[in-house]
Image 1: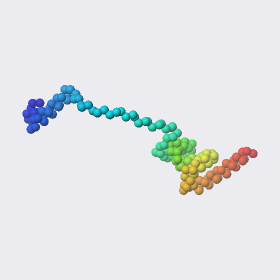
Image 2: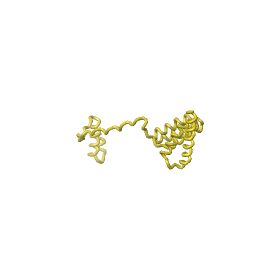
Image 3: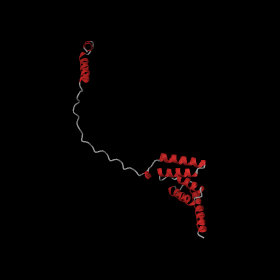
Length: 153
């Protein structure tokens, strides 16, 4: 340490640095008492959303894409599950409803197909394919009426 002080151009600064180094290793330096602020209450945690009220557009789109894959593969039941999952993630998602209508129609479940076609038009009344969907609704309604009237005889 003496050599450090003697050989330095700024002996006073070197001595202070050396003393600070010794003091830091010898005993902890006490900081000045900091002003203590009153503790703020923690912000309230957001209320947990029920599982059926999740909003996740990313996963909704992914579920829709997987459903379309299953439809191309020919697995209609798996596609329906994915389309319903997409709706759970994004309540106002119209496209899975249209695809659900098509899938249920493919399974010859006309009442379910009709339900989802109507929901599709409620969300997108001015959709580019609205006229086509309305025709599907009319046809399915007629078919259901015929089935109901023939089964009641």
